[in-house]
Length: 282
Image 1 (cartoon, rainbow, N blue to C red):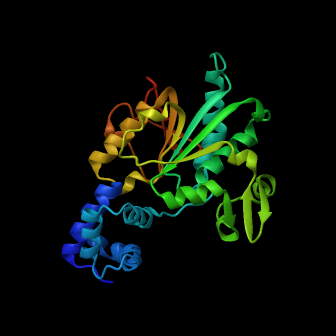
Image 2: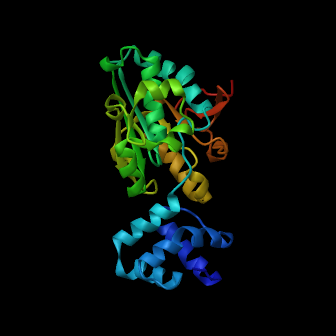
Image 3: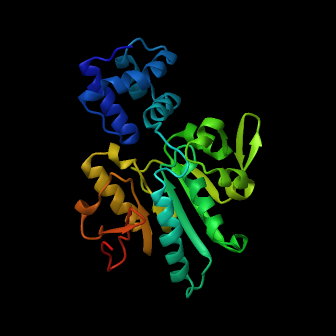
């Protein structure tokens, strides 16, 4: 199914309203590749018909199908690796040290925003298991959210095929934290139990989630406009603890969003502590 110039504009407005992703006039190929099958399944002959069916028939199922198709992104275990090294060798040790003198020294909260099919939060959980020997005596909870219902359903299962496992998973961690199941692998229940999955649109309020010591929000805001990016990262900073850490994508810089976003460099990864008074490149 081919999209016209006029249809690019109306579909782009629809996608922006549904999930905040910004599509310009050069993204006709993306609309065709990701939404043609959605339109055909909905018995739509044109993209205009798809637009009107979503706008005026208020078809929630169709809305979710469009969100799932547009927001399906590339993901893998320990993606880019260096953020997880920074988590292991800098962030978690720092959080443990600062919590030692508090009323809840073994309570840590982590948020994996835009978690896709779960590889990122499970990778985070494995890092905690690797460096905390008595982890069963700790209260560590990882919230994993995504706008895609399909991604959340798959992530909740904790099951991955051989191809998904081979992309980023270290053999020693595979043998330690997964069991063979049919033609793939299933993550151990003790890792799965650390992660709670929930559908969430990052453009909507999320203060009800509580506060977090660590937030991963990587490679999702690159699809937002500047106003929405600024809003998102400031709202993320607002739910971080005073010494909490924010991880973003390797190509994302937050310095333009104000003085609270001063970058720190650890293990070849740029981190932010937006609520800590004194932070700087080290």
